[in-house]
Amino acid sequence: MDKADKMNSEPVIKIRDLKKTFKSNNGGVIEAVAHVNFDVSENDFVCIVGPSGCGKSTLLRMVAGLETITSGRITYRGEDVSKPRKEIGMVFQEYSLLPWRNVIDNVALGPEFLGVPRQERYDKAMDYLRIVGMEAFSHSFPHELSGGMRQRVAIIRALANDPDVLLMDEPFGALDAHTRILLQKELLRIWENHRKTILFVTHSVDEAIYLADRIMVMSARPGRIIDIIDVNMDRPRHRSDPIYGQLAEQILAVLEREASVSFGNANTEKMTEMKENLCLN
Image 1 (cartoon, rainbow, N blue to C red):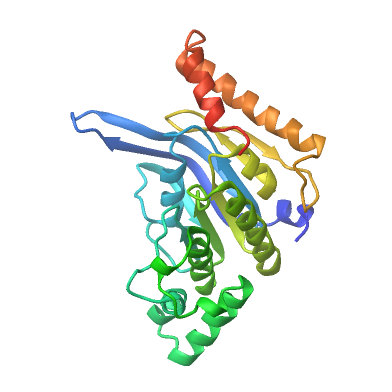
Image 2: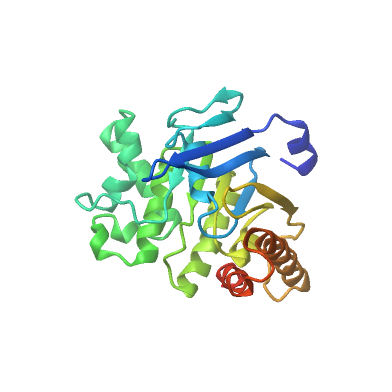
């Protein structure tokens, strides 16, 4: 689907005036997310960046139906999201594989829950394992795999459910830099072949530019969308491209301006720390 078609079609995910508050231990109220509004179109790859504690993961969990909404509305293809649904899959930062199941049984977990016959779900799981080059590890257990291999399995386990939308909460955050780059390329290859709609949370500005069609920048808590940036670069993208660096500077400038408001102009140490946490990895 080209950009014009996306603009004319109904959003897959629509968020309107979303708010989330928590009760603190001392009886007070913590506002995590405030007045969030955005759309995600068909086959979009959207990244969300922002400082630690700004509500990125909370936002993603609400879209997944795993977290209740305080006020506002989230819809999937026009239907309210209030609980998990099979059309929306999620990949977490933690390696969320079941340790007592081998790789193929982990990948086949969703189809098993849906009542897919044993051989059919195993055939489907093997097809996905071949996509990421892990068919030789089908009978290995999670503790026998590297971090990068476990995260590949987590991604294809989500894909084996054939979700319409894939939510990803810093899935590569715990990986070393080299493995992270390899899995970024792997994810783009899978996305281009399967054309899922992806909403991806990351701390890394670099990762967002490499992956996304659009980047949504969140403020410090309470999290708000303070900028939406189109990444008008052809794929594959090269980090040496001057446009790449210009986009990084643009996004970091937005975050630094937000930090000056949130922490005060005198608090330069806190601003520098936040910028370093979001800099190129």
